[in-house]
Structure formats: structure tokens, C-alpha cells
Length: 111
Length: 109
Image (cartoon, rainbow over all chains, first blue to last red):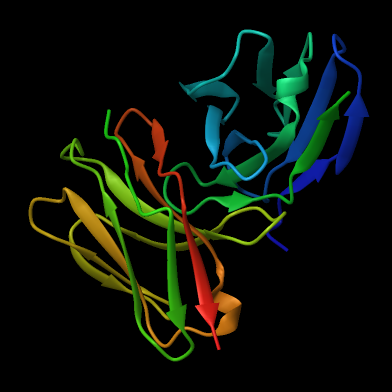
């Protein structure tokens, strides 16, 4: 158990819909990262937050947004969903640099 | 930004030492190199991180030559449970995270 909690574990939704994925980082970790992993593909870095502020942005689509709240949990919002958005979405947390701890992921299926 | 390149797959046998090399030609002075292991349907797990020369922990060693344009993850005496995908990652001073495409390692009995 990495200490990073992601909810929900599975999500099935229709095209055009909007969903919110939630992440609770390890106690004491200030950084949260979001990743997308499509079937049998590598990890695509989406965005990183540090202590409530956006720190780095990767290949995140404009239809996607994220935020980190004062209690350090984070949410990833995906809107106008397309079939190609079906993937595993991982959240990870760290002290700010170095070793990151990953959650078990949310498997999103868009039908 | 650094670009990371690693072999798509590798095979080895139980008890052997396995070396996986990642190329990162454009690595900058302050960038760190990290390796992760991932099993199917699980989140990646940290293996080792380094900046230069050699780093060793209880599960692996990381070799980084002086020019830092590549790095080699060394797994001693692998077992069947080491079958997984291994990713190298370059993290730059702007907090950008450049992941390799992953190396699928298959260990045979």
C-alpha cells in the first residue's frame, strides 16, 4: 500500500460527459502528480501541483483540468469525454522531488 | 527538454544479472534520473534515483557515465517476480517529467 488513495477505482461513462477523479496523497506529501496511461502504453505526465499551486504542466488537454485543495487532496476533471480518453489515470505524491508514490489508479471507460 | 529512449523488451533467465539502458542525450546539468517498475494494472513503484556515477540500494544499482547521456539499471540475480515493465524518467529543474516508453522485461525459468 503506497499510502496514496484514488477514487473511484472504476468509472464507466458516455461520450460527451464530465467526470471527476479524486486523489488523497500520502500524509506529509506536498506534491501531487496526475498521469494518463492508455492500454499497453507508457505513462503520459499531465500536471503537477505543489502545496496548492500548479508547478508543471505536461501533455494535458484543454478539456482536462485539475486542482489541489488546502488539505492537499487533488481532483482531475475530464470533460467532453471522447472514446480515446479511456485509460488508467494515476495520481502520485511526493515531498516535492525525488521518489513518488503512486496510487492504484482509476480505470476510466468511455462508451 | 531531454528525450528518453529505452529498449521495448528484454528477456533473461532466473539468477542472471539484467542491465537495462536508457538513452537521454539532451539531459541538462541539473536533471536527475529515476527508474520505476510497473506490474500490470498497478501504479509504478520507485526503484532507484541518481545524478552521476553509481548508486546502489537493496534491490538495484544505477550506473551513470560521466557525460550522463545514458544510464543503466542493473538488477542482480533476477527472479520470475521481476517480470515487469521498467521505466526511466528524467526530471528537469523546471519540474518537467520525461518518461521513457518502458522496457518490458520477461524473466524465464
